[in-house]
Length: 122
Length: 122
Image (tube, rainbow over all chains, first blue to last red; front, side, top):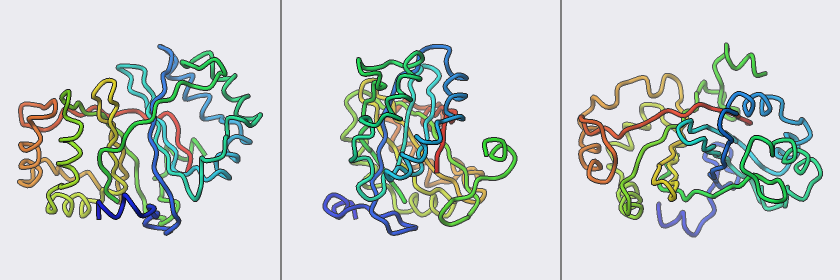
């Protein structure tokens, strides 16, 4: 079971569509919890559509309030995420909008660090 | 949409079974990444069965290597997780087994801090 995971693509146990899971962390500026939530409750509809069309599924972001670290979890369907979403105008607009409350790179993208998977159980 | 989420139970978009999502952090002792992975690749089959029967689904654990923080994500089906799994013999056996490589409470349970959800997109 563990070994087959290394060689075979993972399949969503419900839809049987090939997918993969990803987690990463980002950094929120202190005191911006409510503002981050508010902006995400009003995510640009065009960005939501773009993410969805790109295969991004079951995308959740949590906050570690002790360290202002954001933990993101998402599932990527098909070749989801392999497109360079960051090259799109709508994504760059979102990054510029969010840049005042997050730790960012020079191109406004949020500093984002992938996290290795330790365990998974369907 | 956001408002209905507060009052109505969330439903798995694929199975339409009521579920909820949870994330929490735990603390790994330094230098124990490979040991943590190894033990979880060999999770007690009885514990795996107990989790599954308790409604725990899509359970992933990631490691933030900069801080030795473990970040767990899981979905709980039905009234999953409301049972006190910690009262079971198999769970206590697992906690005792894991206690030498994690930050634990006096009863051997891992120190576990829930993380608030900032964003979700199906």
